[in-house]
Amino acid sequence: KQHTSARQIFTEVLDIFGKPSRSFCKALAKFASASEAAELKDIAEGARFKELQDLSVSFFDIFKMFPSAKPSLEYLFGLLPAMKWRLYSIANSADYTPGVIELTVVINQWPSKGGLKTGTSTKYIQKLKVGDRIAATMTNGTFTFPKDDRTPMVMTGLGTGIAPIRSFVQDRMYKKTVLKKEVGPMVVFYGCRHEREEFFYKEEWELYKKEGVLTTLINAFSHDKPHYPPKMIFVNQRMEENTRLLGDLLGKQGGYFYMCGLAVAVPGIDKALKGAMVAEGVCTKQGEDAWMA
Image (tube, rainbow, N blue to C red; front, side, top):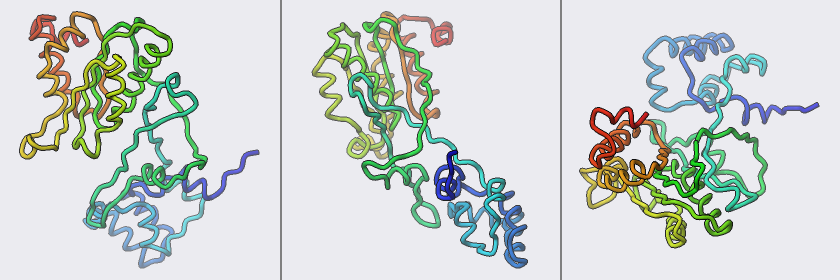
């Protein structure tokens, strides 16, 4: 039989550092002293809950604030939610770099009225030492790849969304340099805030270009000078500046397009793609939605 320790329950199962809800405070009051129970109910029903939200308090913080509330482990399973998986895209090709799994991780930190806060997952990763064993699982990706390696691939990576794109480029690097296959054009639109802090794998992109695998790398550093402030430049604007390239590779040569990053960027990228196809005569304005489908 496999045994689970209390430490595992609080580090791998229960989301003890997650965001508490009003209902949690109300339920916790049942296990507290009379005075602390009254205060917990006041939080659950009043304006003080918003004040605690502004401080980015966690379940753990609430337990520290109300030490008389001591539900048993059995009750904790009902009070606390299960920890959600943090899904990271694999950033390397298993053929190009066998035997390892590489991730692109940015430490998630944000200021609050209670001080600087760090995300649960990235804080955990940040403290890991070489050789540590961790609990992890893998899921299948949803990308569809061209059957012919000569088919063009145009990709946009936003922030850590560059991770799977790096693996795509490495895959063709392996096919070209090791298997001696002919590979098609690859174009990467790379978007991030600052070149100095967030332009990952800079030397690698130069290597892929030198080997003839990466055709073009087009960057959009939104918060760098000279355009910022006040103007911010995003990948969709870089795409709008390269309509001929997009029209040729995606429209005329039937290439594949990939976008990895925050969903908030999708409308702008869709608009840039449609605009490029119309501008280069691939489709009409009336037919741009049908082309995208």
